Length: 480
Image (cartoon, rainbow, N blue to C red; front, top):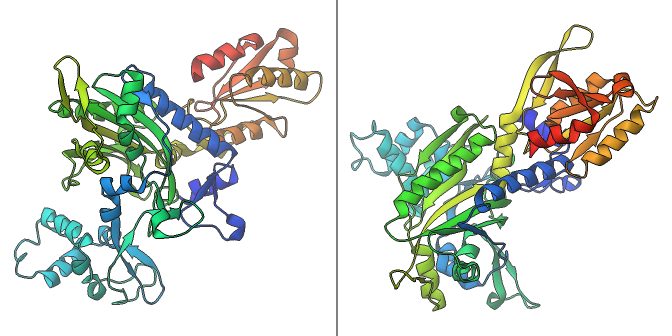
């Protein structure tokens, strides 16, 4: 991870937010290459989800009526117990502390909490895991941590405060007066904007069930502990789709979308062995089924997308709290019903980090002098690469630079292309490898003779000559 974070800053993928002021924890800025790659990622998702007959797009407001979050349960339930270390002042979510605690320590806490209830069951991993989930959600039970755990940061024993509930939503105010009547929230998820617009989209698009609504947008969570670079942040983007189905058909579409979403990651270069399914045994009160797609990060397996069968809970809640019908009319059966929902929810930032990590490679490569040197290469799928090609005039004379500039200007009408005339051509290749540029086109003395250029492929480093006027077609066939 250290190498990837270093590369991300050095080459302009990701910067720490407000770095000159010491940074703001849990917030990151996407640099020149990062914003290109992130946009490519979002566009790929958007094409996969909406370039079809049964999914419509939406861009809902970040600020919504406060009752939306009462209906969704976020006001009452979107909290986590947290504890502070009295010595070093570090703050931790109780569930994260338990998640990172050894099985031996979990057993110790279990014995202390309920010695009789769990006697003889401490060899059962499922019992231990269920206990950890329950204690994380129980403010009273979580207090036992004070006596049995050491601070991961400073190692202090019995130094934790009692657990306190911590609301994860950011508050702000609408209007000039900052009082409780004007409180609104920065949305913690994009899904509710889709639910409250369900009938608006359905009526405007004349869609019939089953159909989906997709959205990419910012969400905000006041995370107690941000960690692992882009994995857990306070400001992030979600790529979500809610698919509305007739009750009784939810299982079929749940499996369909599981297959579709896993296939999307693999189609963009993820190796199947880097991905796995995680089934949720403990479900939210509204959920019928939930699976996560997890990627094997350097720090371990982590969720990058969730696929959830949400029943009709959300639309039912908004019907109750708003007093407005959220029912769909089936003109064939002449019945009205509240649809069930299949949700796919991916984090754009987490997906960005997963693809960046998966692409990072170090290997020995030949040099022009016959030796070898280490090269760093990002093996990004061409559709995700921030720069699609580089144009490299071998020298800045004899008209090579003029040809290179003309080719660059022509390609830039369709692609992000980098022009580089500085340094030895081998050094220039290495710089492009490091940012994931799939193809380099070199203008050399042969170009002046027969109007051909050398094209060099990033992953194999193989080179071939093609006609100068065929470069644009060559690139389009491999990128678009």
